[in-house]
Amino acid sequence: MKILIVQLILCFTLISCASSKTIIDKPIVFDEARIQLTSEYMSERYGIVKEEPIINPKMIVIHWTAIPTLEGSFEAFEKSTLPNWRPDIKGVSGLNVSTHFLIDQDGKIYRLMPEHLMGRHVIGLNHTALGIENVGGTDETPLTDAQLESNIWLVKYLSDKYDIDYLIGHYEYTNFEDHPLWLEKDDGYRTQKTDPGSDFMQKIRKATKNLNFQPVPN
Ligand SMILES: [Zn+2]
Image (cartoon, rainbow, N blue to C red; front, side, top):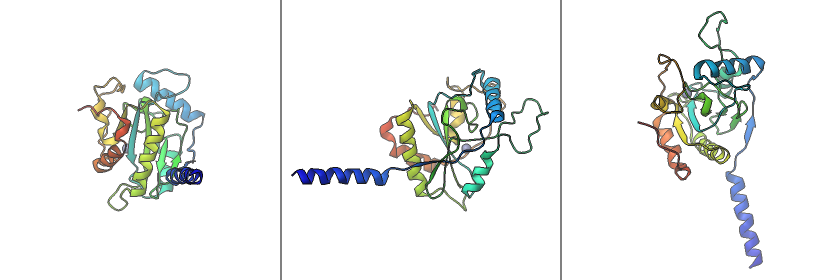
């Protein structure tokens, strides 16, 4: 009997090991310039003034990069300032886009920046949103089952760690325009998004149903 129990415990341990994943740190540049631009973005667009651009994570936003490779996707986020940005153009933030996590086509999970700092990946909600980007998403390089599995794992991991109320696809972000979490001051500043596709979101939602996220506003 004792042996059987030991075997059972071992078996469960092995199963949980097999299904657990690792997060690989692959940091983008987060130097003084980026921290300063992030703080400026936070105060100018959201009216939040903090010594450090720290987020209060209540939401996870899923994206696709529409770039077919890990390195190409990483490069889009790597530098502190937007490509072709000129500091003399007033009113337009030069802060480059960024995301906390990037998941490759093979399902490997990379952390690009500290989880507690603000990334620039979703208008109106960056101050409260953790971002997960997925490599690919075009017809030529659709998102994969390995990515789906890793997104589900990562959503669970982050929900264990933080008090997350909402899980959304980037294409759903404007549904929050009248929500208390929405802080963007410029009504004209919007972009049209389709990532990461409603099918992909539906699958993640189904697998994370027991986390009881709140419904996306209509
Ligand atoms: Zn996106």
